Image (cartoon, rainbow, N blue to C red; front, side, top):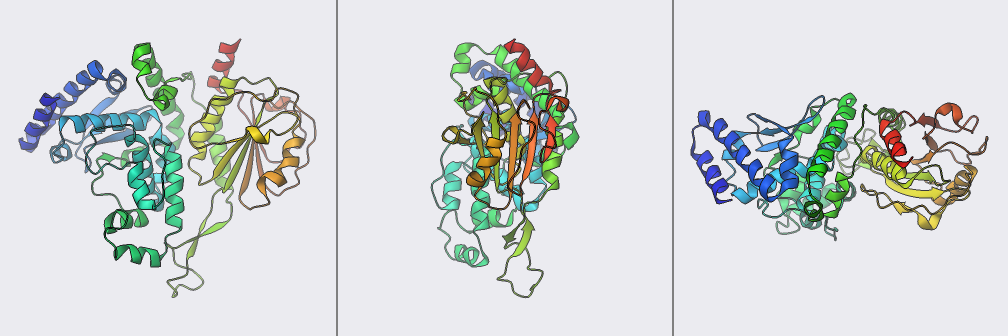
Length: 451
């Protein structure tokens, strides 16, 4: 560790034309240190291609067509005054972003100036809560608590923090922003509050998130296949004792099934979700088009889903591993939408008491039903579960075998996700959109493991 600190000090004193070589030597030494003392992070880092580029932040991930690349800026790194421990903490920071799939989950949101800073803070807080020896300006859940002004639970998924930050900013008005400027000691002070309210970059940001936007949406499936292969290789190389020392959420990420071919149903579902707006919401960052001269009146933005209800068929044909996998895939897609997501198991009835909120991480799935399948039970329960509010979406995850006709009493959008081919779907003229997952290779692999 002392040697890494010395290398960083030496890097800060070298002329610009010698910093690249010194940085490569530092990265190599750091990887060797982690392989010896923290093999999980060392194994993941050793599978990342490294490139040196002159960027404003010392390090970060950049999307390529088929994988993710670690980008390090020698000039920015030389200006950090980090210790060896802080440098290693930031390498672990980048690894956890990759492990929890933050880059692809939030790439689209980062392209929105209104959301970019919120995503940075939410994902950094989710990662930093698991790390020690961080630089002084690192964002954690405690930082978010100071900004938002009410308790924030530690070690939550980034989607939980992002939702909390979006709710906080939606409550900010020109009056409350002006008030915060008059109280420098309130929360984090003027600078931090204004940065979140206006979505400007944080000056102390140390890992760059701009590279998350470099990839194309159409290539996400290939990057996901590579990411899961990296995690599978890492899991195989670790001993049971080494895995046992990792936090539970990291251990859960290592339990993956590599896919042989790119996925496709996620893209279909994402395109379907993007076609249907769910009303409008007030936005104080926009002018009111009807009365632009009145600065106190908010404008409007298109609102995405407020409430998403996922109904999981527990009739017996789908195993717990299949359900957990499909819910994890839905979590990645739905992270882009500021929605309340609740999961309900069903068979001949909807099991309300066994429902749970989906906050970015899938809990252990335990079957509570197991009888036949009656889809109409869902549609009969929807008026009670949704309360007639606008911006509703129902997703039915099922094998597709039930009655042949259903009636939907509410004007809401419905998406059927079938684990069987569409041709075997029992419902005629089903309301909403029907998408088959039968060709998903990961689903096929899980089913093969159960046979």
